[in-house]
Amino acid sequence: MRSLKNSFKRHVLAGLVLATLSFAGQAQTASPAPNTTGPGAAGVDNALLYAVAWKQTAAEYRALYYQGFNVARMHVQAALAKRQPGDKPLAVVTDVDDTVLHALNYWGHLVNQKKDFFDDAIWDQWIPENKVTAAPGAAEFLKFCADNKVEIFYVTSRDQGEKTYEYAMGHLRHLGFPYADDKHLTVLRDTSNKEKRQDEIMTTYNVAVFLGDNLNDFRRKYYIKGDVDKRLELMDADREKFGRDYVIFPNPTDGHWMAAIFGESEPPPTDANREKLKKAAARSAWQGK
Ligand SMILES: [Mg+2]
Image 1 (tube, protein in one colour):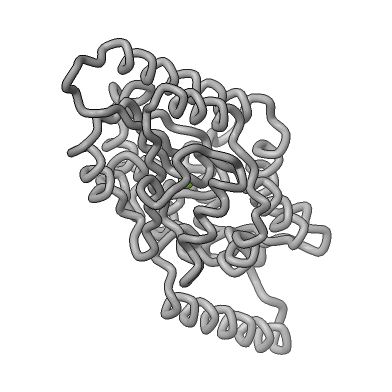
Image 2 (cartoon, protein in one colour):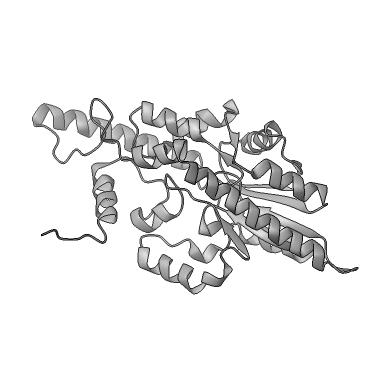
């Protein structure tokens, strides 16, 4: 999906899929597979449904984007007002996926395909199709920045092979976003660690605000695997930064929050992972009367 994918991972995943299918085939002939909680024949028990339906329909989801970009604009306006001769130029640093652009029809396709976890192979097919849409309020905010000569730096983690950069640039240009050029777009194929690039930008620019849908879009320290409490603790410690230095957008379908639960951001669609998801959902649970 977004990062850390290379041909090695692709082969490992393909091998795992084959092994899983082979195992499933054997299990079917021996006895019915136990503990199958994935989407059934109608696909109505898909664990993704709530999250994707919310993304596709909720006015609240759209409003949160407007809210985020309104807050970001206030920070840019304040930075412009405070600017003194000789200051470093102003910039905004933003993530791409689920921050300034949306992939709603990708998620709708997964639901129609009865997929209940992010599907890397389908994602890689979807990316070159240019089916992205602008996040609500993104185009207007980015234009406001450009009109005021506040530069936008896009820093994203993606890997679709050799054409990764071309595809990412194509998305920005398809949506007519400003500063869609080599200087302003960074695509990290081998890592989701954005900190080095962000620090480079900050040596030359005063960054008015950072935008992202993952905490890891702001600082690397939040990328915690398999430890929900630790991640919450780190975020709580930085509570003053949210809405100030960082503007965060909602993403209930995917992201590094999943690494805290599953140990990885793109967990495979196994029954063991469905059990982990259920356990996470019942982390706090009333016992009933
Ligand atoms: Mg993102």
